[in-house]
Length: 581
Image (cartoon, rainbow, N blue to C red):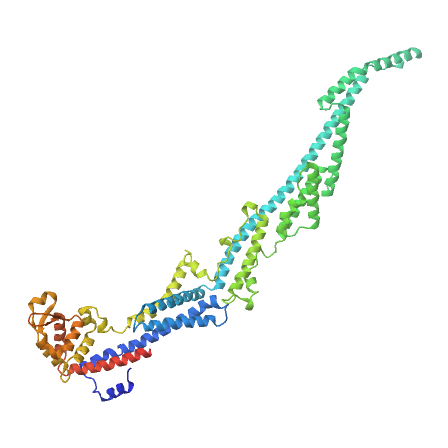
């Protein structure tokens, strides 16, 4: 474990850095050094997670507020703290379980942050009002169409019944005239046969007895000629009028007269004015159509007009034998007359006034949705009361449903009209959590030599660490750079192994003081021990020779040891700061 007291004592006794030592320390302690970078990353990720915490809290409120009051707060704290600490822990070590836990935490954080951001950009009050207005327009349009059709049908029915009664009255009057014509012809036929012989005149006879005798003869002649000829003439007239006899004519005339009298009396009950049945029917037509027009405008049908419509239907049914009833005419109108004057559904503002506070908020948005759904269902039932059965609306149709508040953000991701806004909100939510993860991975600790893959990685990524390891592995008591030069001087060129990447070779027995160095180089695949006839040979890669030459060119004797000591001290401080972050 790192000893703070020992570190402080070493800093007090160590000489102030100069030259290349100062340049090395700037990499750790400068304004853009590792130390300040770690502080900046910790602060930035904390700020990002604070913002994500607030958006996650707002999103979780929509789902978890019904459980208990603090449930959204606890959930947001758990998710964001898990995301922040696990993201920071990846700087030290990446494990599969940490990645799975961090992935789940970031997934929850991103989704609930997206819901929170979406509900701020597009508040529930806004999209509830928009969807409610669209459904209102759909229902109002359907209701207006069916209502206009119902009033038009009622007027057509009134017109049809009055026209049928007027036509019936005309037919009865024509039949009455025909029967009267038949009677007139029969009377004329009787008169003609009775007037075929003239009665004798008194002035034509000198004495009275002769006149009496002549008159008696006239009477005898009239009686004799009345029989067969008159009967034949009357039958011909009756046949021409489609009657079998005078009894049938009398019956038809009695029935027609009674029907005329009944229709005339009934028309008088429909309209008081008018001298004839036709005039009274036309007056009744005008009165009833006017009453329907007024009822369509006002939403009320007076009792007198309802009674007049009922009498018209009854008269029409009795005269024509139709099965029509008053309910057939008035039932659709009653559905219309029961409509509230304000409209088919209550306005959005009037429903919002019923909520606590008189306005829609995230807390009561679900209650507002329930109120709107009840209004929509009632409106659908009223529309279906007017619509034909084949055109009845389905209350469960998606076009007549308010989108669920919990699914609205997800639905809009696929809605062409609102997809852009939804994707922007989702990208913003993912950006905050993604930056936290990216910053943590960007400031990962450098891998150790144990994790280096191949000699190239060991030299390119861990050059300073390798120098420190070499200094620790070389024999103590002398300058590390001088010992390294002595170690390399024991090797000679090896053309036979150059094709395999090994340019230097030395007898292992000559390298006995440097066994730890040989072991280190072999572990990193920078060296190799091969058996031979005269003993074992140690091979060195060309890359290590280049690395050693760079160290010799950059540092003077005694300088490398001081730099490595300062680097170790700075590394310990950075590690301590990373543990605190």
